[in-house]
Length: 457
Image (cartoon, rainbow, N blue to C red; front, side, top):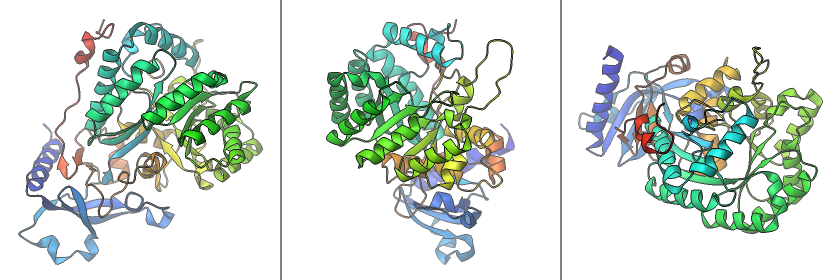
């Protein structure tokens, strides 16, 4: 074990011992304005500063700058732990995943890295293998990974065509109960937008989602009657009191303009709920004038956007002629953020035909997004895109910030700057839940071997 690993191990042990007494202070943690506030953060307030974080009975009792350290911080009767300038962030919030698809890659050897290919082989696998046991065990495996890495809330899309909806939704509800107190789980139904033409199908899905406290969602693409179908989605969501979540414009085709149409529908209907749209890749291929007109409407609607860089980099511009992809496939987060549009980043697919890799580690998503989208120089408040902003989108008041009165759900990294944190995997990170460091290990892949077709070949 390296010296740094020993240091992290010793620090985790110190925090665990202090947590046994119910009250302690983590001294000299490195915080920044973006992780402290629920509202907007000015550029001048994004720098790191050293602080002491007081924890009592699993909640944050107080946060004081080292520059104004109180005498209590040096009280010998208070369990005091020196963090030596390590970066601290709130636990992650992941607002766009596909837990029901996760880990099926070994069963889909025909997957070719393309979007159409992924749709085809996933459909075959779903029909052949997605029993209640299969879905539950794969989802639970992925949730244990996410918990280990420090994620405290997840929204997953659930394939909701008949008969799969009758299998996957009950499995999700059972898992949500099992994970209560560890990961807050939300679910959004998922089906192709043209299925909305069937009023009975839409009504059944909306009722199922409403009964489960979920979100109404669909994969939206430019079919001839797209505006009519979007109107039906918004009306149905309004009737049942549901929020909306769409996949849209996951293509390089500049003619794909569903994001704009969703914003227009929201404005036209005066929709009272929250609307989230994922992917929006085609924006990067459109003329500036088209982009400006679309984003102005998105900002006015308002509609939030989540970027999925891991999956979009994997799928978009995939070639099988020995040539290199020519574009990144990611959406225009800088332009959106300048307009005040809520923008998040999320993990999306995990070890399935839409993305052969991943482990539900939001640090990996944050790192990749920072590099691919140039979310640095300065780093600004982009950490909010994996914490406070998705928490706001999901309506979760107790997630995403480090503030007095909030649960002490924290991640303490070995790194002391963004460069140090984002340069290593930070496998030694200390995840603190309700004031106590977790000891949960990563699940081992052989656990999945007993599910049909998932053993290593």
